Length: 100
Figure 1 (tube, rainbow, N blue to C red):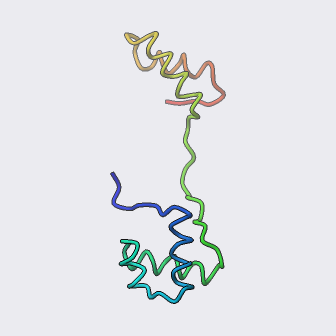
Figure 2 (cartoon, one colour):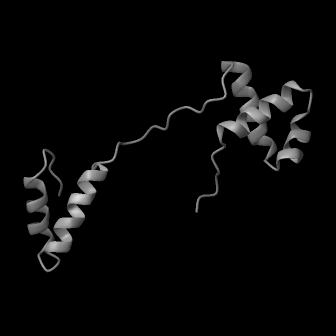
Figure 3 (spheres, rainbow, N blue to C red):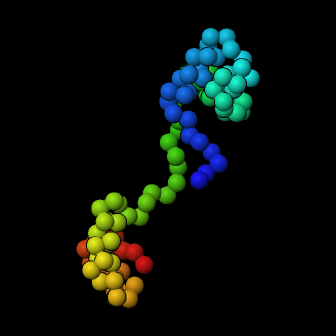
C-alpha cells in the first residue's frame, strides 16, 4: 500500500469551500484529518488555476491492454507446460505488437 492517498474531487471541493468560508489551513486540517501541506497545496492550486482537478499522471502507457492480458492468460492456461519463448511467440502471432 502506498503512503500517499489521492484526494477525491469531493474532498478537494470541501477544502476549497472551508477555505472560502474563512477557515485557516490549520483548522481545515483538523476538521478533515488531512495534513496541512495537502490542504495548502489544494488551496494554492485553486487560487492559481481556479480549478480543483488534478493533473493527469504522466508515465509510460501500459504495453498490454486488458484484452491482451486476458488473451495471454488463456494461452498460458492452455499451454502451461510450454517454454516462455514458445508462449511469447504464440502470443505475438495474434498481436500487432512484439513482446520479449
